Image (cartoon, rainbow, N blue to C red):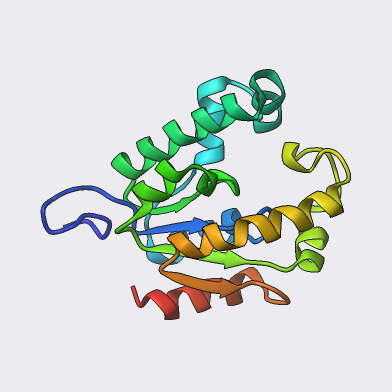
Length: 177
């Protein structure tokens, strides 16, 4: 049985990482996948591959609603096909349907404070949800999404002041894979 398969032979992610921009989902996800010898997948990359352009381009061309629809489709596809470590875009948990399909999965919420998030992602417009007044928008985003991340999470790990390797080790300890 593959590590991401359940006893009924259904493929499912071993771990699903959620959290706001700057939490380290992609960086830590790759480290976890390498350590566990499983593939890594990022739904933002799935959206980009499907659309043929960056997340920012999709967001600006189709609006947030269009992007969120593509994000939801990418999430469903990854949950059905992927057996490794899966990283979700920071806003994937906004849709109730997305939160519902995460039920029963091992979901790790990587939390991050404003200061650490800003130092990791900077204040550029490369992230569409932060295009105008990035620091203020990031603070609002962190506050608004916190209960949603916690609602889907099996485990919460604070990434503040930690290296990606330290976060990886905390995740491994918390989920005991």
